[in-house]
Every structure is written in C-alpha cells, then in structure tokens.
Length: 211
Image 1 (cartoon, rainbow, N blue to C red):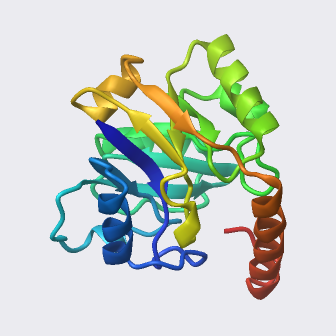
Image 2: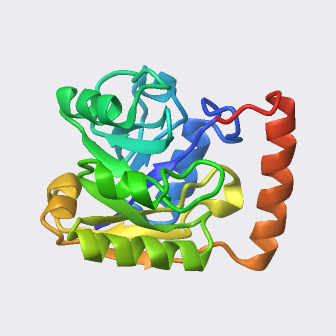
C-alpha cells in the first residue's frame, strides 16, 4: 500500500490546494492513504470527505524550537510549547511524534534537539529538503536506532506524489515496527529556486515571523 503522511492544504498559511483538490490528485496517483498535516491547524479534519483514500488526522506543530509532525491526533495542539511538552501532548492524544526535516534551516529542530528528546520516529526523506539534509537525517536515525518516515511536505500541486511510503496494513504500526519502505525524491535545483523565493516572500509578508 502507498501513503504520504506529510502535506499541506489551504489551512496552512502557505498551502495552495483545498483538501478536495488534494484528494483528487492523490487518487489519480494511486495512493491508499494520506495525512493532511497543516501548520498549527486542525481545520482540515473538522469535516468528512468523500474519498477512496484513507485520511489520517495530523498536524505539523511549531514547537518553540522547530516543527514536529503529530499523526493520529484528535485535536489542534498549541504552538510555541517546549519540545518535551509538545511530544507529551501528542502522546496524550494517542498520536506519534515525528521530528520533521530536522536539518532544515528555517524550521528544523536541529541535531541536538532531535537527539535529546523522545521522538517516535525521524523524517529522513522530505520532498522539500536538500538531499544532503535528508541523508544526514537518515544517518542520525540509524545512529539513534529510531524508526524512519518520509513525506512529500507538498504545498503546491506539482509537489504532491514526489515522496511516499510503502506499508502493509497499518501505517503507524508499520512505521514503529520498521516494516515500511521509503521512496521518492529530494528537492532539485529548480525546486530550490522556487522554494527559496516563495519562502522568503512569505516570511516578509508574515512580518519576518516563522511559521
């Protein structure tokens, strides 16, 4: 089975597509499961959708020190908390906490924080991260003996489907038991130019504030 567990809709302040538009794209690409993980917003999960694809509830939380993916949670999680508090809240809600793109300059947790705190898994293949940063994340996960995940981190139409996870039956259980296969592509040169331009533009519009 095929899943993408990191993507953004219009409920992220930098997302462009509705959930319905995302579902249509992912159905055409043959996905079985997706997780909508908007930045600090649970609005995508406040209604049901007519879809053949299973939709896993999630959110990308801005902790005090970087982004944390929360999967299988039932409500919005307050932004700006410490890393430890954020992980505890995710666990209290029955979810798993993933260190998202840990080596990303803008929003990653960084190596020290990823080492220090009790993450359930580390994202080692992110479609919007440089190949070298994904490789560093994979080495760190191996060193820490942590389960690994992958996700497109898609915000724009051409980014969906670039990264995926192959799993057997239960995506979360398979991740934690390391029964998944990670596939896809890191950010290429053309995407990097577009990404940097768009990220800086949005950063300026936000008044130089992080997401």
